[in-house]
Amino acid sequence: MVADIGRDIVPDTLRAVRALFIGDVVGSPGRRALARAMPRLRAEHGADLVIVNGENSAGGLGITEGTASELFELGADVITTGNHVYRHRDAYGYLDRAERVVRPANYLPGNPGRGHTVVNAAGRRVAVINLSGAVHMRAARSPFVEVDAILDRLVDEADTVIVDFHAEVTSEKVAMGWHLDGRVAAVIGTHTHVPTADQRVLPGGTAYISDAGMTGARGGVIGVRREQALESFLTQMPVRFDTADEDPWVMGVTVEIRPDGLADSIGQVLMPAGE
Ligand SMILES: [Fe+2]
Ligand SMILES: [Fe+2]
Image (cartoon, rainbow, N blue to C red):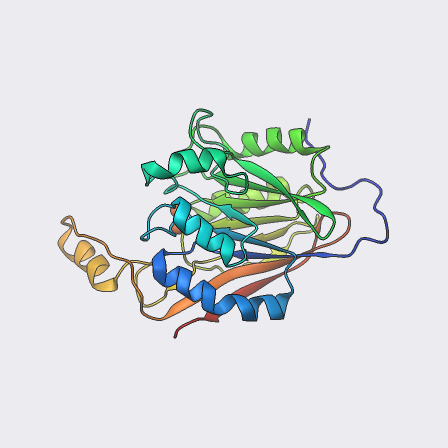
C-alpha cells in the first residue's frame, strides 16, 4: 500500500507553509556565505521552515557537531546530509542523538543516525526525509521502495513531507519526482552542487527540482579550489583538495506548501554572498 500524506479534510484556518531549502553548504566559505545571506533570505521569503543540506559543512567533506550547531544557530530547523555524512567518526554519536539531523534513510539500519524527522512549522507536522540515489552511489536499498515504506509509517505522524533526494544522475531524480508526485510536497535534488533549471510543480502537486545547487564558492569546481581540481584532471594523479573560497553563492529553493500538504509553487534561490 502506498501512503497518501496530507489529503485528509483540511481546516480552512490553515495558511500556507513557506519552506526554504539550502543546497549543500561547503566548508567555512559556505557557512560564512549562509550567515551573510540569512537575514535577507528570511526577510524576502518569510520562511516558516529552513532545511539545510550540511553534508559538506565540515572542511568541505562531512559534518561535525560543531558545524551542525553553527547551521542551527544560523536558522536551520532541519539538517539533511548525503554520501559524505560519515566522514568524521567523532560525529557518529551526535548523529544518533540529534533528532533534527538526518542521513539517507536507505543506508544500512545499523549505520549512525536516522533517515527522517518530523518538525512543527506554521501549525503543521512536516516530515523531512533524506534519501540517497542508488545509481553511481552507495545505498543499501532502493530509494523508491524505501520512501514508500516511510510514507506508510508517516500516515498518522505528518501533515506534509519534504524529500531531499541526494543523488548523482538526473534520470533517477526525475523518476523520483514522478514516483512521489501527489504524495509529498517537494522532491528536492542535492549532491551535484550544480543548480538545475527544471524547477516546477508536477501535475499532482509535488514541487520538484533535479538539483538545488550548493552554498559555497562558485570560483572553484563544485566547492574545491579550481587549480587543484584541474591538476587532478590534467595529471590523473592524487591531489590534495582544499575548499574554494572565491565568489561564494547561496543556492537553494523556496517551496510554498498549501493547507492540503501539496505544493503551490517552487522558486530558485541563487544569491551572491561575498564579503
Ligand atoms: Fe555535497
Ligand atoms: Fe554528496
